[in-house]
Image (tube, rainbow, N blue to C red; front, side, top):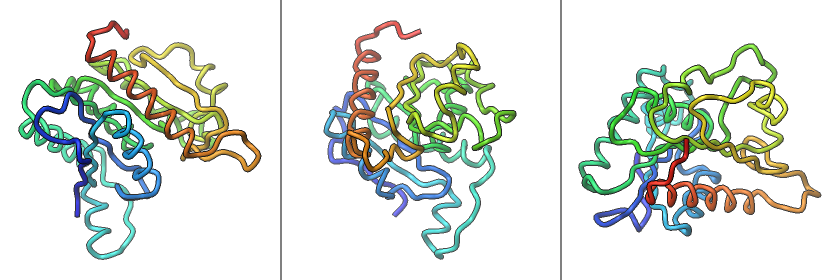
Length: 220
């Protein structure tokens, strides 16, 4: 298994999201399962796939570090091309992912990939935890389509005050904060909202973003 599609995926779909996994968990992790299900409930079909290093891990059970960025990009690019071939020219293709997967999606969009209509990142790794001198946002300014990031306010890879201190980021059209969420959108025990609630909220924000794209709304 190296690809999972939701039941709404197929000819006639108005929008499809290619949803890439993070660095340490596969495409069928609990987070990815919940997010994909929530997106489908919002009318967005998803295609999940695995990068080469994760495919090898699934085959032999050995953990490996992620492939280098050129390999990750080639893998993502091939999936975009396959979806376009399968669904035709009229389907809106969104790319995104969890953490590293979202970062790769944004880098791919910065290369002006013509088949990409929008980017949505869930828990973007703005910087390694505690390393504010290593921001991963330089490519944002060359992203050639609307981009949204959905981030938990407790995410050590980028908290509200850290991101705000950077000022306006050219290329980032929308930044949605999920109160209490960590890198996996999990909330503290006494928080009024659960991880499942925040994931559903992320799916609703994604749906709103996709509907604006379909309507041709100006997002920049």
